[in-house]
Length: 287
Image (cartoon, rainbow, N blue to C red; front, top):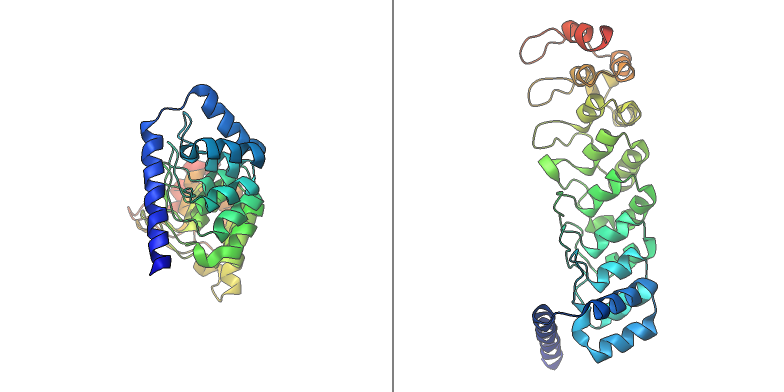
């Protein structure tokens, strides 16, 4: 009971400090001093600043970033450890909705990513662009970051939907980040058969965005899992369109050729009954 009471008291004290920090406006000099200490990793100075004014753990700069964000961005795990010991908020979001884990991913601060995940930060928080850290790492093509995140895959929902319900695999398809797609499939167990809110599978996004390398990744995944290329290339989206239609609309001849050599049928019709041949002529052969 005493132990439980001490935890409760510590949480209450943290709330008090946050409230005080919110009410108290730090001077520009004070703000710069504490943020620079966090960025540089100078623990001695950072401790001294904290002892002089504990609310400095919670003050924010013009972007809404705290000392935790700065330490995470600069990969300063010694500062993060001290902040954690003083019950600082490791999940605080800045004005753009980014947590310290988001900014660590952005800057490829691998030690900070490890530290934050080991200390139980949330991995499913979406920023204002509807990105969790798994989406952000994929969009930025941070394969090394994905490899670190994969060590904590039980804490990460690889099928989490972001904007329009797109998974990280959809994002890899849009930007043709083939190596990210391979890592998401092999290390996280991401499924190319997961549709977004608009009814598109990752292979449709790959075809539509002329991401031929990533489309090949999906086709090889299908073969490995007992799904023939001709079946993968025939997945219809919510409107009844197959990847070949998406490739034609994307206007990339390489993606169109990959669809055709994988068994796509030119005679397949769209939901509006327009023959694919017409699309090929208009979108590819006449451009």
